[in-house]
Length: 238
Length: 238
DNA sequence: CTGCTTGTGTTGCCATCGCTCCAAAGTCCC
DNA sequence: GGGACTTTGGAGCGATGGCAACACAAGCAG
Image (tube, protein in one colour):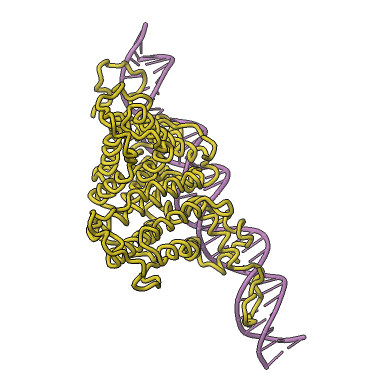
């Protein structure tokens, strides 16, 4: 709640801030999440953040920079359930199942806007916003890449069939997740999304009747190796 | 190409139009498809349509009405492959497979914007655009409802297990389709989307080891019964 | 030709958008 | 307390957005 409730008094020169930067950022994030970048006006922002234009410009450089920061805040929040569940110490299929279930729950919270802030952002934008569009697309690619890496590790561990199409599987579950975000935005219930997840898990590749041999219950390394959500760089369309 | 190349001379009083309304509408549709409603400005529109502001208002009432008309034009176009394939005279699973394959192809055409004009439209918008938002959500619900009806018919025909969760299945394939539109917008290739479809079809419910009994190869009625895409009215979140 | 009807081109209006400027206020160091 | 330093409040600015007004151009009917 307090502006500087953390350890050090953190000596401040000049007039002290009258608002909590983190709280203001959170308010901005919720607005951007709900209405998108273009749909959120400067006045909307300073209204929700309870600050004046000059304070806004002083604390955050511009609307675009604020959006970037808000996105980073969202990613940090989402990483808790996304990267967390994805790197869980279970077999790969269960990890994906849990990630999707978490997505279904997170997309339908009643204390936050529905859906995913990243999934549907800047998909239809004016050319001037190409920078933001690419940034959001990069985050989406990052999540998909993290999924692909998890599947790859599953193959190495032996709990995913060796002939599984890694990239296509990651694209499938990424697409499903994005579609769930869309449905949540359209008002789908949590229960409905959880049912969708159950159906989606039916598509998990089964062993080709022979690689069911050795079951690997112990992961090689339990730490989250490179499963962070980061704005991945563009790959050639393929 | 000509303004009135159809049958009757269609006597026109007053000064004749200097542009083809259908062509102009098509140009507007492509712009809206690419950039969305908010992302397309008045000047963008009259520039692409090659008409002046007054001609714009004369032929189309307002930007919002034009968007509605452009959406209707898109829906009419999409119905050819969506409703068409969905009502195809095959078993239900094959119909869905073909619809999704068509979606993968349509979403990655090089003569039209990528993705789906409906799927990602108005998902993040200012409150003033609630009307458009609801309209687009209605179209999305309409497509999902059409899927649900097709599955229901499949159950009646006997080529879908009786215990299949109709609504959940429709939501799943609707979500997958929306996610594919998103991936297409992010640059996914046609081949990748077709792979995603293959994986998605693995989730189709299999007969519970006993209802494989009578195979129904002849549909009860081959016409497209109520599978048109229409802006369905809102249902209570469930 | 005269008049009616319909489309066209230009100019401009008002609101909003994102942002800037400047004087004043609050806090620290000395 | 004096001055440095930072933040705040509010007025306002240039650009753009969507649109309206109005005079004129181009066709038909008589």
